[in-house]
Length: 404
Image (cartoon, rainbow, N blue to C red; front, side, top):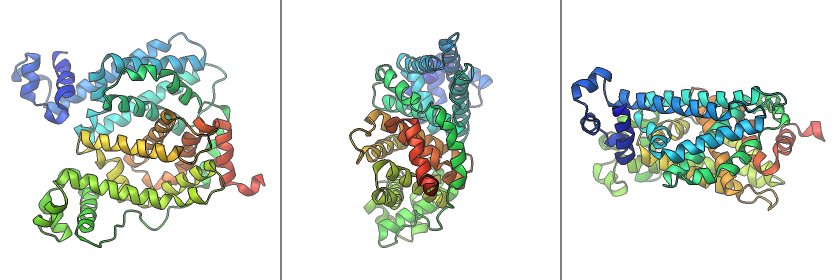
């Protein structure tokens, strides 16, 4: 317990990468001999601490909803319990929601496992009572991911207490998906078009900077961010170290620039259906379908944006948070006043979509993302239109002749 408490406190102060075994032992008043009797190293101690926090969180959420028979109340009590946990112990929350991404590939597996546990909680809260809506698995996954996005954003902004004040809006957002019509989404998945043959990550090699970005994308997607060095990037790009230094401050700066360039091109190439549509909701649905095709056809970018993005540490998590905020602003832009989702709902929905996409990529099913497009559109549109109306839009876009 002392080592786990020390891990939480030191990670909160210095970040995962700034913690050493010596510092842990000193902070916990434990000898190195005793430390290594329990753990092989810092990573194992960190993951044990992570598991301990998650176990306590799950138990607390279960206890909060125990005895309640109405499914809406069960969901509300569970979300409020989660918000209270983050607000009361932001250090532990930061370890599990932010710093865990810096712990490497094994941490990604832990995150996927944890997400499944919380998804099971939501599904159980619904299944324990009669009259509950039958939600597709990916919708439940999105609800959990969206709640995690809101909590992570509050931690990154330094205001975890705000999550308690967000409670009612978070519940309203989550409940917008819980309608009986959601079962209709299952039948839409089979109509997704095949992935595009062109890749969104093809960068025009018009100057030295573009050569560097393209080389970074190739190396990081094939061998991982951890293998990147300035000499390797220079060799792959065919440029000098002096040229690299003229454009970037180091590997991290170069990697983030690569992400920014590729993500911008991916979004730009997916936007055409939005501008061609007759109405905002149909445009959003078309843009999401196009985005899923682009991502499915571009494993280089999806690997960088949804897996390797975590490797540089907290700075990359901040990049992801900022990217979600930008996408949420795009989602709200152009919506009629009566349909425009709140900023909170838009960011939670984009976080939900991001979580579903990450699941597909992390489990090796990125090529199947077009099958998830109807659910992603539902996560984007239901808080603005209502669940049934959102599914009508998605259905109309995929089966126009049937509704004519």
